Length: 136
Image 1 (cartoon, rainbow, N blue to C red):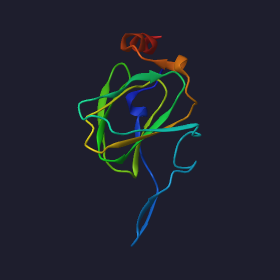
Image 2 (image 1 turned 90 degrees about the vertical axis):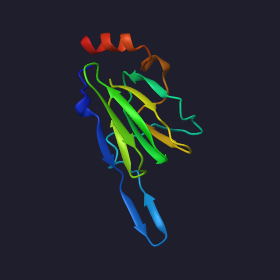
Image 3 (image 1 turned 135 degrees about the horizontal axis):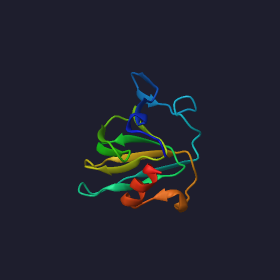
């Protein structure tokens, strides 16, 4: 897995707005993969964290639909934290990047767009195993 922290990038979600409010649009041209699965996290205690894994196959885009939270991304050598707090901005996480989501604000809703159907066998949930995958 040769993915690097620099491959994790912010994505602007196109929006339309007028006097009635804003409408964000996620279409095939705004996401760098075909979306196979959509899920969201909500009612998360502020001291909880989610994630704590990497994927062998899945690419993801994470969007804060409401509220805010931080995403820690790690390529095995470098880490960075990204605050997500705008529903028109997503974080693209390619295959082979460890992620942890934490510091949820009250009422935060975290939307995840995924490139694969759920498959437990393609998750790496042990950080030491992740580090060994990154060196092979």
